[in-house]
Image 1 (cartoon, rainbow, N blue to C red):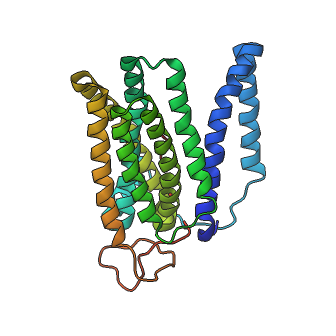
Image 2: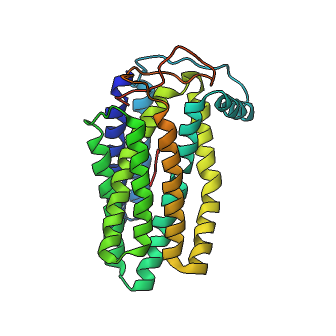
Length: 298
């Protein structure tokens, strides 16, 4: 698609994805309750095949992208890592996107439950707080379908600094404060993931998009178990408040560093999209685009 449509498309796509996740879980539960597990499995299989038919028979790319030469999987992933050495802006985005879920994921999955158990909030309060994350994510993504900031990287990284602060409050505040922190986490996740995802697509060399996406997913899948274990260890040693403070402050500090680096991407009045080049490349504006960011899956 056109670069100028990336931000709106990503925001709309994430909004529908989040709504689908919320409705899908409820719908699956209803199917199991009414028709049993077999009915839910059949419905899932039928809809899966229907989506596959649409992809194969109807969906066609409007704009063909450049493609690198085909090579074995491990060699292709290694080529993606090698490409990052010479692509500073893409490297910064990949490092940021790879680390997003490592902070907020453990805080929401372990920290929130630990707070609820320790303070006797009850299942209803825990469910409400969790739903606020999803609702905030929908709201943040929906806003990005029409808002096109002039400096998308700065807006995204500023949102993630706020998200780190909200993680701290998640562990330190009372029931109402923690619920508000969940809403902030959801909204900032929707805004930042939309912007950073679109920036990644607009900035990365299109011939390496597949390889770099694999690098992103690999980093998240490999490091998340360690992040969960580390957060759990901190909860055991100092409680959920300490664990949320350590993860939240660390995230905010890292995102402040990314925010500072992103300011060097911008040229006065630079509004044209640009593809990343090696550090010594000359003659091209590095302001990526004012119109284009899970990919925070939180």
